[in-house]
Length: 129
Ligand SMILES: [Zn+2]
Image (cartoon, rainbow, N blue to C red; front, top):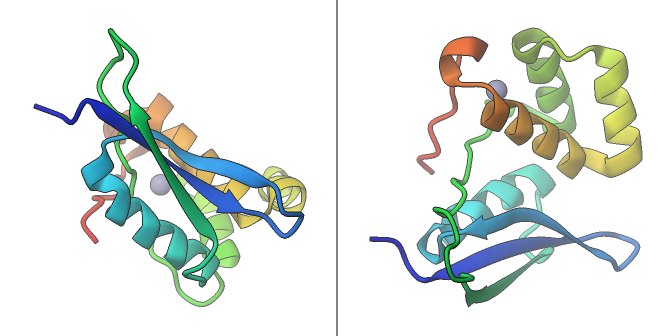
């Protein structure tokens, strides 16, 4: 039984804009999502959480996916992981990083895991924090 509410985690960008980085998650998963984005950004004060009732007939909440191992710069670790394990070219990775910052890399990574099963990708990221 999941909560009838859905939470969204927003990341405040340097421009002042907020970017939704975890959408329609189960509110009890918010802490995991915040921990994840703190690890990505190295900051604790960039995330804003909103909670609203799930629309009638809404599907199950989205899972909060785990991160690859991060050593040193999150952007470098993510680029390496996307290139080595996801077959996403360095050029594409660098383009995403340039265009959207490190949060774009995480979203690209989450998307690839959402669209492909762990079997297809040959690895998974348990989201235990
Ligand atoms: Zn991965």
